[in-house]
Picture 1 (tube, rainbow, N blue to C red):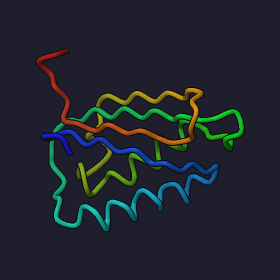
Picture 2: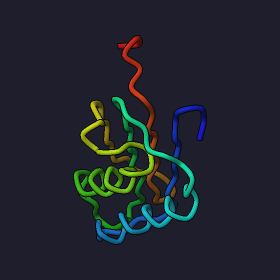
Picture 3: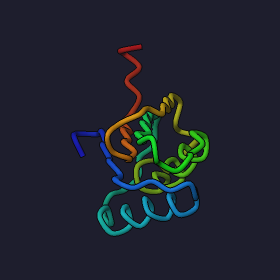
Picture 4: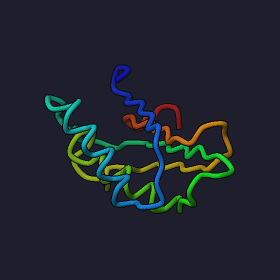
Length: 108
């Protein structure tokens, strides 16, 4: 956590979106027990870093798993996400990076 911004790095990937969602959800349940979700608009950035040998992941499934896992911890409902950026890139290590923060309307 940095102020109102959450930065998350998941050093695991799987082609099974249900398992990925459970992995992130379990992390939030154990590490953020006292964090209360907030109201208001949010922006979320998801960066899927994969190697040449990583399992194939659909960006839509990863985004859905991440948003579902953040619901109830960061925000009350994923309908609060008004800006979503998802990208898949080659990297030296397979992982997913997530940034979620209140939408700064003044910068728009």
